[in-house]
Structures are given as C-alpha cells and as structure tokens.
Image 1 (cartoon, one colour):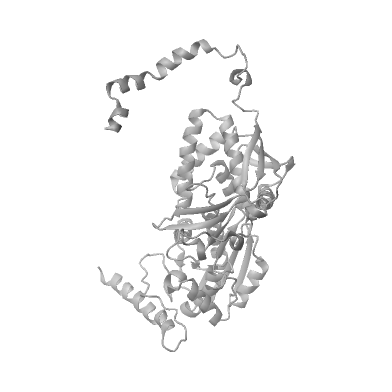
Image 2 (cartoon, rainbow, N blue to C red):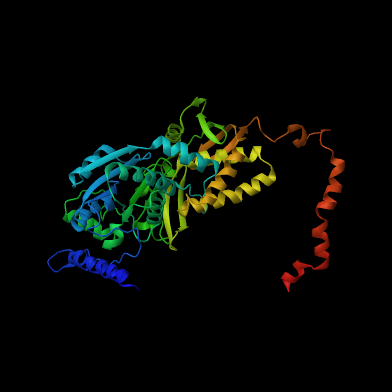
Length: 454
C-alpha cells in the first residue's frame, strides 16, 4: 500500500474517531454511536473538508430528517434539500419543503417528475409485465432511477459537489442511488450518513426527539413507508419477521383490508396502444392520471396487497408488505393482451426476457447496456399490443374476463369446438407421430420412470 493511500486511510479513520464516536460520549444521555468506526473505501465517497455544499435527497421521513441536522453538525457544510414528486400521496410536499428549511437547509426544492416517471419508466414496466420474485411490480427500484436523474441535474444547478441519501447499509437503495449517480456524473461524490452513524430505527427516533425533529414514526408505530404512484412499500415492526402475521389493518395506507371491501364486483375496461394504457372506460387520459384513478379504484377493493419475502442485492432475505393496486390491474391486463397477439414462441421468450428485466431493474442495473437490448426486444413485441381489456375487480382480485385486439391471433373458425371445415383434423395424427418421435425413441431406450422408482 503506497504512502498516499495509507495517509488517506488514516485520515478517514481519525475523522470518524473524532466526529462519530463523540456522539457516544458519557456526557450524552443517549448513545448514538456507530459500533465501530465507518471507514470510507470507495473513491466516490466524500470526506469532510473536500466540499462545502451537499444536495440531500429529502423525503421528510425519519432517516432524511435526522440526516439533515446530522450532516450540518458532522460535515460542517451547507445543505440543499431536494424532494422529487413521483406521485407520493401521503406526503404534503410543501410541508416537507418548509420542514427542510426549518431544519437548516439553505435551499429546498420540490420537483414534479410525475409525468416523466410515468411516461418514461412505468411504461417500460408495463410492457415488461414487471414482476420480481412473484408479484413485486418494482415501484421502489424504478423510483430510484427517476430520483437519481433529477438529483444529478439539481446538483449541477445548485453547485453541489456531493449528493447525500438516506439509505441504510443493509438495503438495496444505497446500491441504486450511488450506482446511478456516479454513472450519470462520475465527478459527483456521495455521502451516506445512515451507513456512517450506525443508528437503528429506535436510536433514530430517540435522536429526533432529542433534537426536536418531528417525525411520523414512533416506537408505538414502528412502520416506515416508501411510496410513489406505482406502489407503496411498508417495512418495520411485525413485517420484518416472516414468522409473524402482519396486522394489515394497522399497516395498509392505500388498500382496504379484504373484510372491508365492497361486496359487489366492478368491471373496468382498459385500452392499450402499443403496450401502453391510454384510456379507462373510454376516457382518454395521460398515464399518470390513469394510474391515480386505478389506485383509488383498486385500493377500494383491496387489490394489489402483497406479502413478499425477497432477495436483496446485498444478500439479505427480507419481507415487505406492498400496496400496488394500479400496477396489479394494468400488468394483469397488459400481460393477457400481449399473450393474445403473440405466438407461443414469442410468449415463451417474453417471459424469460421479462424476468431478466425485473432482476436487472431490482438489481440497480438500469444503465447496463444489456437493459437497452432487452428494451429493444420488449418494445418490438409491444408494437402489436393494442386493444381493449376488461378486468373484473373484486375482493382483492383483478381478473381479466374479456379482451379484444385488431391484432388478435384468435381465429374462431379454427378454434371453435363446433363443426368447422377450416381446420383439417386429418393432419393431426401425422403431426402427433412426428412431434412425439424423439420422446418415444428415447423412452424405449431408457425407461427413466422405472429408474426413478429404483
């Protein structure tokens, strides 16, 4: 190890020895110490003294509210707060802006990115039938792409050399934010205070109370949420332990528990053009409005509630409760319409392509070149995905009950079970003989079924 690197290493070590450990001094009534000094090893991690202004991705929640104060104290720098509107419904964004200024931000910006998020990213999610590990429509991973794009833009506009985020060292979002930010602008540095200070949820709540920072999360209400128009993620409390049954009546924010949903089903008609929803029940609207409308309708009927045990990027297996009513309805409708207009081979390949798209999106690889190859295929197949789909919504289900398309491969004269001369049944036996020839030959050489019993 050369002297320059070792000097940098030691300076970082002593920085945190001086600025992190004092938080656990005997003078403090509450300890917020990191269990061991956090040592920065990546070139893109900013160090105190190297910058004067940081852009904070500010949500107004527990982590970023505590962080806004902590950055000022521990990095001795100015903070610009950035809140990106991608369809959050629980938050009052103007109140969040005011809160940031109250906590010491020199500037606070709220950026409306709802239509860009819907038209650029969610359209690809719909066309790819977004589904990670049995049902997750990838609201959070997609949202991180959009927020990172806006953050890089505003870092330049406000003269910030560093971007700070509120992600923990155990989650996926640290990978997404840091990977995307440094990909879009390699000159930018990043700090992750939550990873540095080592506080858990309970310690953060205590820190907030000690510093007069108002937060929604308390020890009596342990749940934390991350939402955008495409879905709402609930974590914490009983959700964390898969052996416990989450009390949905206390957790759900968008969707009604099944017991409280209407006893009468509703049928909604969705029109697609080249794989993108363009109208609901005959009313043409932009995608962000369609999603908003279906979130309300689906939430009323308890559609899209998902208990998911997922594999995180960094290797942990965790559980979350997701609310994604509009995503569930739109993906179900799109997938069936796509299957109607595509061949068996196309549908088989598309399922594989979709799964890879989902893993790349979840795994912070949106800007990997392979993603663009996948999107090229997905968009090619979706050119013909136009038509209408009727979805029956009832008691937590979204069932496709009818669909029509000018590109439909259904031919009633061929598929009917009634008498028809259009299909030559005389050819069936010859087809079967050739189609099963390899199977028949191999089985009569080696009876694998008999071997399984031995």
